[in-house]
Image (tube, rainbow, N blue to C red; front, side):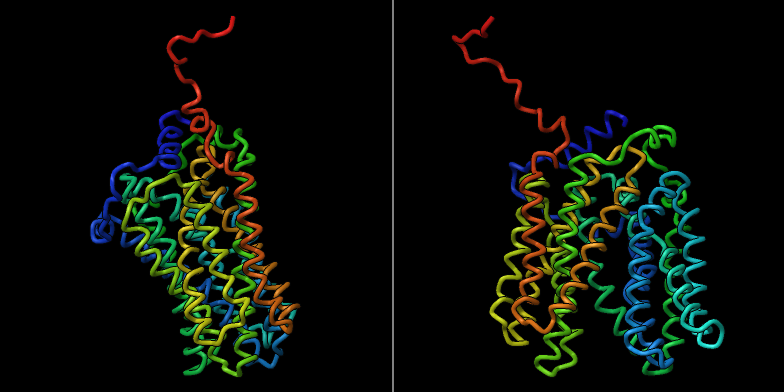
Length: 431
């Protein structure tokens, strides 16, 4: 890695603020060239991440395939999309972003739009095949955007705001996406919902891939250097392991919301509770990104994870629906801080030329945990206290790993800083 890149990234991770936290305006951030286009294009292109699972289920049910098969298709799509992230990240580090985004978006959109044809040609087997390939070719726009921020927003304070706004705005995807897919299905058909999902994904990918920063972007190191440098190190591995616990909590929360809806016979709760969680995340991103916070990134990551765990504890009291909607906003708000700090930590610990791949592994870790949380919560859904305890249990695991790994989450150079001190006067070193 180039020495100055490592120094800059180490400072970003370990810097403390002795002066009062400064206020940052989103107007200044969004006014910078290319920022609004990249952020907006990424959000549009990622709407299918929240729309496709719902549209696939609605299409399968409308085609009389049954809820069980519909759920299988949706799960397969999400799992395939997660598993392919590191491969796409590695390809972007080697060949640039447009060369990966555009072919992936074209294949993904074509397959989603033509999925209804499997009802007449190929049946369930063809549907599974189409969904698997569509998931594998989901454009890695989130990974790509995170890799672009240092070039687009060189100012560290504005980049901090960009990362927070980027992370928090993801909540909008899950507030807007599923209702939009459901509304299109109700108003017309599930096939139209799938076609709209495909069109949005392709449009967003085109907007991002054609932007000058995306076309100019290259990893910080040459391909030969990046290939010869090991990505995995103890700090990254432990960070990614801890994030599986964060994902586990999110997956368990989604099933808990459905169980709450059934227990209280209010179908809307299955959507309202995750929406409240996402709203908390979005609002937190707006607040968190407006200030430069004191302390180290590692400290904020650990503290936010502890708060994220504490936010789930009131659910153990089996609150009423209205109380649950109020309670779930807090862990949603802290999720933004956890994810933003996790990305900054990943950036500081990753060798140059491998950053897209590292971000992809981070997202895969969260996705894997989400799948595990969903699966276990589904088996325990009938046990009310067990279901509500799972989000807190997953986050407790994440916090335990972070506390054990806190020294490894700081680059080596930063850990050594301050150890070589001048001996006190009047004392002599031993011979």
